[in-house]
Length: 349
Image (cartoon, rainbow, N blue to C red; front, side):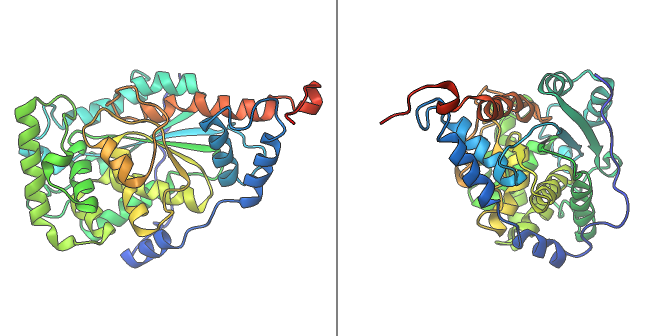
């Protein structure tokens, strides 16, 4: 497939103050109830028992309500991968060196990664956004991962990567050490210790996972002052690509674009929006449940039942892209099935 585009932020940043970002996170548009009702009305006439297509029916209603269309479409599906590096890698939380992040970005550009193949099968365009030239965040065991300006710039970059001509947005990430950031962020938002959220990541053994948990505990103790402020927690314990995902999810909500979230890192990155608004992630669907240890607990905390469970733990939006054909099938059934009247089939009495 062609090399993925690497869109760069242009113009003024979307957010220059934490107050402006907080306002955008707490003032969110609702779905289109009229489109949802029109979809339900048509669904009731199709040649099948009511509810017999299960979650496929709910997915069509979800897509249509956020697209604002009684006839949802998937003509323009975009996969966006944000890549970033983490200072906490210096603590030995990954068996891979930080240089692999840049090497994988090159692999995406060359078409050699798993996501290149899956995006092609899904009929989706692929966009890769390296964050801050892949300069690492601070080691969050000794300092906040990002200061305010760096965090806002990263959120703004994610916001800018979401265009208007998108029917469905699939989000993913690449960053050595980012499962440590995701676990720390999940613990900071929902409680628990490092051992409750730390997993194998890119291949740690049991001793490595235990060490990773201790590093997360050190970070939680260092940044306990962030308290119950989700944005402060994301700034102190997250990463550049996680902040960008938050910005992209926020932009999609204000532009009424439905979103497929990928695995543990992507879900953790979006979680602050759910903590800031009771329906903050209503425009998202969790594509799959990762094999990473903390993802099932995080999905339950956010009330995001996954569409797929394939023991994936690769990241790079692979699970999100895999779910696209499922959504295409749901839309095809809704739009292409005959009604009872058209097919001459007797309706139930």
